[in-house]
Image (cartoon, rainbow, N blue to C red; front, side):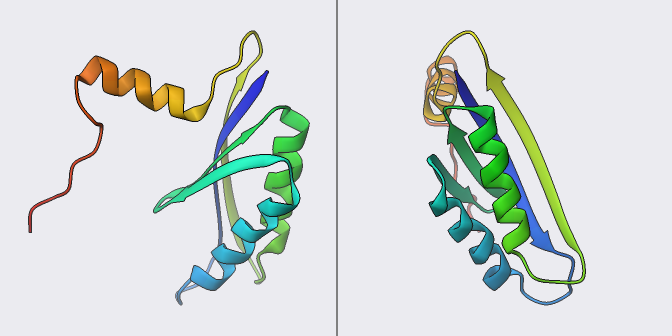
Length: 105
């Protein structure tokens, strides 16, 4: 089984969130997960849903503040293994190109 999730953890504040988001990402290092951070959150892969939930909870708890907002979206593959990269590869194959484009300013 593979559990893939999009995790977004941030303090509710008007100031920069970078330091607190960095704490959330660093907390993931204590778990048997792989992850990649992007501008909108962090994609996490784990072999079990329990490991994924534990990592997400640690990331949430690592952020300081009076109020913390956490969003967790999970794709729990129960009948076969699939990595996050495979999902992107399938879209790029159907698209016939890389699923990325830089805006021209």
